[in-house]
Length: 496
Image 1 (tube, one colour):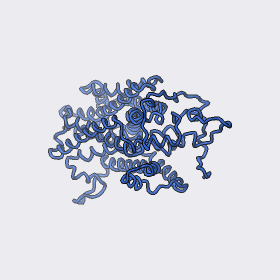
Image 2: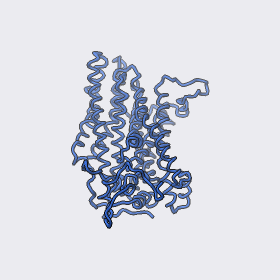
Image 3: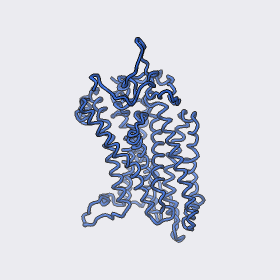
Image 4: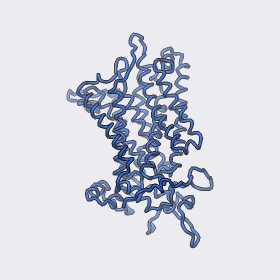
């Protein structure tokens, strides 16, 4: 039966679980919830009627997706001349948007795989929609290479197979490397996301009252019964997929950075790009996690499960990766100066002082200056300052790609070939429309699939572990959450 979050529950003050006490473990599930209420909350979202906030967000996202579809049709019927791409800036918004969206998905894999391997229990409330964010971000990223080739009906030429003329693609082309990297990333991420949902899909199957819903959930739950053998196979498969997904966090965006690093162009031909791009991708990805988690916990009534501690931990990871990005920015200028090469020096001076200095200034403010407010704990507890910092990073990471692509291309070796790049209304419309694609699928996921990993979040609750009580002492989950032992094996009623 669907549960409805009342206004009283929304206004109820929550326990402050952001205080670090070395003698106690922080509570990760608040509000006196037990296994049943957690299941009711999560399944109630899929079984009940969506709140009005969901409908408003879905209508807006669907409108932007419709606009994107219309613009893609206009591009196909007219040609790539509708974009602002020119010579020498033959890579404009399509490659900028591609690299931006690929980076967004990295936080999902980090939260899901790496934090799982390191046994970080705070990941359990946010890993499911972070994994979903990865899938939808890769969908948005894969769209742009497919449509930017000029003849989209020949996009299969990017695949590592000979075309109808018997010609193989150029295996030294970074574009082909992207096909391998992004294709592998999408496949493993999709499998990891789906395998993790199987127990929760079975729960939705058992609780669904609709005949067609039961059939759909039953089909994708793969006959899950919750037996000891099923759990054993599931945990092994999940662990192996996490181990496979972990190196992808480092490898995929490193390969994407080769699009630039293997070129001979000043500002691109640098070995710092792989670690620099990976840190920036995780930075932007966690900003998007916060952008999604903060509204979702209010609109869907999940403040007891996605707590302030989860949001604060994401803010701390953002601060750490943001410092790496700031270091990379400074090292780029140092290396340009230390190289003594006049082309390299000019490329970086042109970024900061040239005609696109407004874009460089926006990048520096949004990626370095704005998020520094998160050093203060009260800012990490305030929803408005958190969203301000996250939106700064979202904007700044897109402008970082813009600065790297445009400022390096528009003035290269010969002043006679210099030209300014100006995006057209189609460029801007497709960028905005890609967010419509992303949020439409994310909102559908929130409505029809388990937005929180019920099976995983229950393992960090005290009910899953041995909690010792005095005779007659009532059990209080908010007080006893700190007493559980996460290294104790979870057993069922029969001791298995």
